[in-house]
Length: 168
Image 1 (spheres, one colour):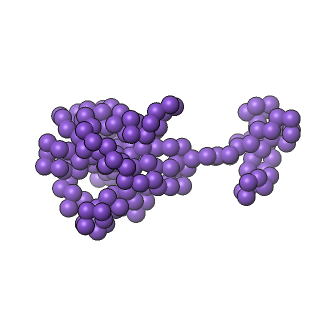
Image 2 (spheres, one colour):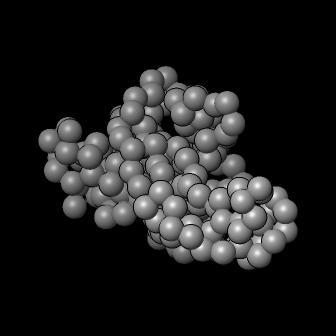
Image 3 (cartoon, one colour):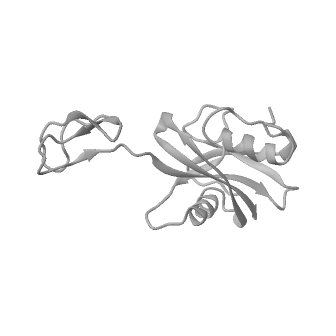
């Protein structure tokens, strides 16, 4: 993200080498504001439905083109543990209740300046999508196929740990 003015004092920002990178910063040393442009933490849920023969739930966001499905994701909120956040997102977006949550891994997503904290979530209940999601699919874990970016890296790792390769 490129800013033009310091949000603290209003001066035009300049670019300086700081901490090994070019960064936008306020030229007023007394102000000292620096745009670090840190990535946003996002939680992702690889949901395995316990009462649906262990099928994995993939969802399509309304903003995505038809046929594109992925993991349920959401932003980590202030003062929220990632494990709590992912269970909250599962409940909010699918109405499923998380029974067990375990970390798969942490993955960079530079295209959106995010870092993904991906979890395997065993869940149960009736699936009711919220307003963010258009539709879902249930896929047998052994038929699941990973994609090569974003949350797909977590899918590949999860499948690999179970001896299904990358699923692709």
